[in-house]
Amino acid sequence: MIIDCHAHVFQHWADPCGHPSREIHRKYMQKVQTRTSAKVFRARDGKDVSGAALFREGDNSWAGLKDVDFRVGNYGRLDFTIDGEDYHSQYMPVAMQQIVAPPELMLAQMQYAGVDHTVLQTGWGYGAMNDYNAFAQNQYPDKFTAMLNVDEPRAYTAENLREFDRAHRELGLKAVYFALDAYARYGFDGNFDDANMEPFWARVEAAKLPVFFEATAIPDYTVASYIRSMVRLSGLMKRHPGIRFVLVMGPPVGFFGTSGIWRFPDEGMEVYRHPNMLIEIMFPITWGGKWDYPYPEAQALVKDMHDKFGTEKLVWGSDMPNVERFCTYRQSLDYVRRHCTFLNATQKAAILGGNIGRLLNIR
Image 1 (cartoon, rainbow, N blue to C red):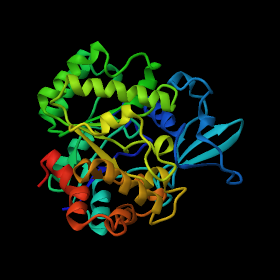
Image 2: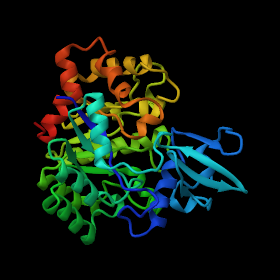
Image 3: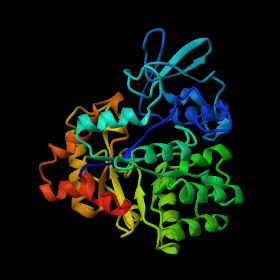
Image 4: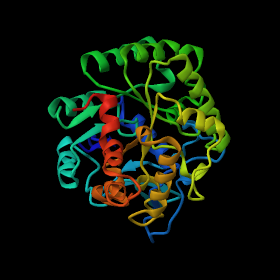
């Protein structure tokens, strides 16, 4: 069975998508675009620009987001205006005429690519996803396993603990998505391992839910920030040995993999080698705009990761439908399925479905 451990369904992004307002949803979307791997360009002449145009240098929090009339466009684009000039971020594929992805779109993609089951992740840019992810999972339980989202910096509050219980117990969601970039909303005023977060982590451990952990290098997006987060994560894993983790997006290539092999700091290795940590293999979504299919650079990094950590640590994900801004769904799978010839059939079966299937009891 081939299981994609990272894909999405979502309602039309012009709407609140579960958030209290469209404005809050747009703020989350704008923050994602400040450091996107997608092509960002001027509408008038197609000139490439950087997503850094969306925020004030030196302030990576929501307070640093510029007023750029950020809005949801068509053909996969998120639009904004600076000094009278319109710009586009090609965040979704051009063929996505409106930015909406119902479960049936993902089902059609899976059938065409040869994917049997998909894990539906979340993220605040997609919306407050608990109800919609549960809808998709309940509609198609043989095809989707869905996870819940929490307000990460405020997960310890009574309100958010109640929402965690509702998402897990009533909606039946099977895992927790936890992304560090959410701390930007509150000016990075806390850390995920602070003492006040203990009620939340204890709740997760008691529920026996795995955590899909996206370790953005907050607050200043440097190697040093990333390493500090790894130290904190290592301590959290020791305090809560009953929690299984998946490192969403895998280790950052830009920090540790640009030479073609991984050069990890000791703090990273301690986390990656932890018996409760699985690591996503997912390169085209971030590097598909710079590397060409079948991504020999990614194949080399997969091989080195496999040599360092072994088959049992690795899980494949695509980040559909976003990844089609750079390649097809089938290509996002086939660079591993067909072209990682250093893996035998048993190893590929584990990475492409077996490992994540065991974690989430997908049969």
